[in-house]
Every structure is written in C-alpha cells, then in structure tokens.
Length: 277
Length: 254
Ligand SMILES: Nc1ncnc2c1ncn2[C@@H]1O[C@H](COP(=O)(O)OP(=O)(O)O)[C@@H](O)[C@H]1O
Ligand SMILES: [Mg+2]
Image 1: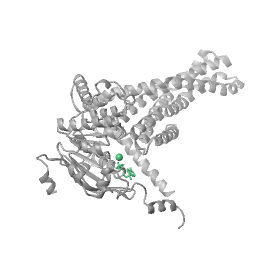
Image 2: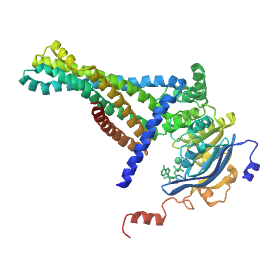
Image 3: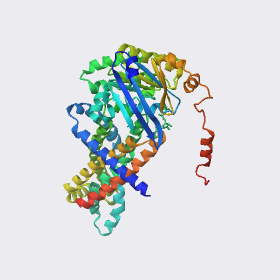
Image 4: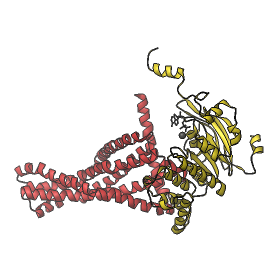
C-alpha cells in the first residue's frame, strides 16, 4: 500500500478496493482483490472471459454485495452505506454497461436528460442544451429523437457514454466498451473515453479483453486471472512482462497456463457426472 | 419438498418486502417526486386504461347477453321473466363486472408489465436506473401502481354499464321485456352498496395485478427465455390472486 502511495501522483484515490471476495454457489470468482484508482487515472482491467471482470465491476458499482472486503468510493465504504447515502455517491460516478442498458422506451435524448432532470434544478431549456452538448461530444447530435431500437450498436454505446457522463462524474466504469463492434467504431469509442478522461479529469475503470483497445486506453493495467490480480503496471511494463499468464494473454496463444478448453480431469468428471462410480 | 416450501416462504417474504417498498416510495416521495410521476402515471393510464376499453366492453357486453339467455327462460316458466334484470344487475355489479375486468386486465396489462419490465431487467436497465440514483421502484413501479389503481375501477364501471346495456337488448330481443321495465326492476334490486363493493374490490385487484407483475419482473434472473416464463407465471399468479382476494372479500364483507 505504501508502495502505491509513493508511485502515484498528488491526486487522492477515488476508488480503493481491499480484500474483495465473491463466490457463487461455493465457487470463488473473486479471491481477494486489491486495487486503487486516483483522480484522472485510466485503469484497464483485463482478463480472459469468465475470470470475473463483470463480477468485480458489479461489486464496485454496488450491484452485487461482496462476501468480504471493502469498496471505498471517494473515501467512503460504499457497501456499508444505506440507500440514501449510496445515492449521494452514485451522482459522482457513471457506469457504461456492456449492452448499453439505455431505457428502451425513452429516446436517446431523454435517456441523457434523465439524470439531469432528476438531480438538478435546471430549467428544461437548459437541460435540452446540455443534452445536445453531451450528444455532440460523442457524435450523436442528430440522434436525439431516435429510440435505442432505431440506432446501431456503436451508437448505443456512445449514447450510453453520454448518459454516464451527464452529471460529469469523477469516475467512470465501463464494461467491455468495445465488445461486438467493428474496429473503426472501437477506435472511436476508445478515443472518446480517453478524451472524456483528459478533458474532465474523470478517472476511468475499463474492463476489457481486447488488447489493442486496452493499450490505447490505459495508463495503468491490471491482469485478472482465476479471481486474483496476477499482474499490475504501466502498459509498457505489461507489454514486456515475462509472466506466462500475461504473455499468453497479450499474444493470444492457445498454449499456456490459461486453459482454452476444459482440462482432461474436468472432462472426465463431466462425462461421469450422475453415474454410479 | 421441504426446500421448495422454504423457497416459497422466502419468495413470499421478498414479495411482501417489495410491496412495502412500493408503498413507502409512494407515500414518502416529496413534492419533487410527484413532478416526475404525474406524466408517467398519465402515460400508463393511456396505455393500460384507454387501450383496454374495447376488449372490456366486448367481453362485458357478451357476458350480459349470455346471462340473459341462460336464466331468462327458466324465469319465464314462472312468468317472471322481468326478474332477469335484477339477476343480471346484482351479479354483474357485485361480482362479474369487477372479476371479469380484472382477469382481462391481468392477462392484457399485467402480462405487458412483466414482459416490459422483465426485458428491462435482463438488459440491466433497472440496474442502470439504480446506478444513476433514480429509484427504479419510483420510476417504473409506482406509476403503474397508481395507473391501475385508477383505471381498473373505471374500466369496471364501464364493464358494468356495458353488461347491463347488452342484457337489456337481449331481454328485449328475445323476451320482449321493455327497456323501462328492465331498468325499473334492475334499479329496484341493485343497491348502491353493491356497486361500491365492486368498485372498491376492483381497486384492490388493480394493486394486486401491478404488484404481482412488477415483482415477478424485478425478481427474475437469467436471459430472454426467463422473461417468457416470468410473464406466464405472473398472469397465472395474478388471476389466482384475484380469485383468492374475491373469496376473502365476499366472505368478510358478505
Ligand atoms: N449471478 C451469478 N451466479 C452464478 N455464477 C455467476 C454469476 N455471475 C457470474 N458467475 C460466474 O462467475 C464467473 C465470472 O463471471 P463474469 O464476472 O461474468 O466473467 P467475465 O466478465 O470476466 O467474463 C463465471 O464463471 C460465471 O459463470
Ligand atoms: Mg463480462
């Protein structure tokens, strides 16, 4: 912990996670996670599918209650707070969900306007202008009046970003922002994320398994594997890492500690399941 | 067996907590909350109430006619065919009107609530509202709760009128009961108490349908296929709940 303090800049941590654990039906998905994010920092959490990235993010934003450990947001223990106090903190962070999670019955503009209407006393005209501004920043100025069902996947992600940034949060969580999009759109979204972080000083916590995207966004990276942080560092040091898990993941090789398919034991187990042995 | 019993108890507990949360959200939200609620309630009234009028009128009208066809010929044997008006009037206002309307609305509106909110749940829209500090119960459940609490009694009143009107037409067409005789007998037998009884009951049916359908949607886990199953469950549970509530009402209030 001391080491982290020395290395980082003058900013206070906006997010601090200590000893986070979470199991589902006896299977440990997060086995003690520690991490810290400071203001303006761009942290990428990477790891193979099923390693617990979404579970970790869900614990961070309060969608899942961890079995043990602490999530300190802006210096407060998020999971120990009651609903009202949590709502107060929620105004200071934004979340961009994997599928966008735009309200399907509201237009793109209404989606972005919702947090502004609910949490500010601004008159409607001002909110309309703010919404246009936010949507222009993500290149969706023309889509204000369209419904989520009427726009493409990339546009949905951008609208979700505009909505998450509506209240100018100090930290933005993104789950797989580039999943399922074409490379050009991915580059565009990565650039938007970095721009938002630079211009607003927003800290980013981005979960992804796309390496090009990860290196474009990050100024610090964490590799998650088997419920633990197995590597952490600046993008350059991660790129040069000798760690077999990290190296295999970055190069996308099949051979290595990260199993591509089930192990022989698992396979035998599943075949024999339910039979008398 | 034992496990499923406890699972059921747990589910009832969670359902009750959800209901209490809805009520406390409804009553504790200040003036600011109502500014956002009123447009949402009006929208739901339009979608749930106004759009249900044709089907409710149709079913109620047909039921009124069936009642006449079923009973009038027996009464005619005693030379008291005009008593069919009292029979139709009382059974429709007290029982059949509220019950039929609630069952139609459970199938039509309750199913739509579960399907829509269940899809929102699967797409994490409910979670998204929560992370924006927009209480999803306030945003999604309370407006529907209020809307059905208002529209179901209105729809029931329309159903009562339609059933009696079509019964009158059938009575005149088949048994030559003059309209004024029909109305006179009906008015003689229907008491204000009966009408109020039915209306109050339908208000509770409205709350029940909304609660069951919204709770089912909020508590569902899994993907798109679970939305279909949840919708089916919500409709069945809603209809059973309506009938059970009706039994309690009839037993307690006579
Ligand atoms: N609600 C849940 N119930 C049971 N198991 C779960 C649940 N959510 C996630 N898991 C399991 O936890 C593991 C990690 O899932 P997830 O966090 O979604 O991984 P990732 O986002 O890294 O692909 C998976 O093995 C998944 O099956
Ligand atoms: Mg995931």
